[in-house]
Length: 92
Image (cartoon, rainbow, N blue to C red; front, side, top):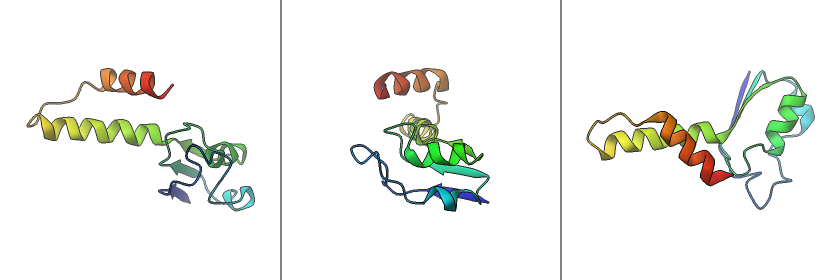
């Protein structure tokens, strides 16, 4: 099963919060958390400890920026590496 957390639970400054208990996470093979600050949320840490593949919210943010760039420029493809580096620099 796949879990996608699209809430702000676990986002800075409430980094100790999680939308599910560690016990409940044991039934998920993949866990995605839309929160990107902090990059590694409690939800993702606990899901990884349960053996799930985890995907952080930074990947979603990068993909959204790329789509917005394409829309804003009338169809130009966003330079993914540059976008990724810029976002990583700003979020660290």
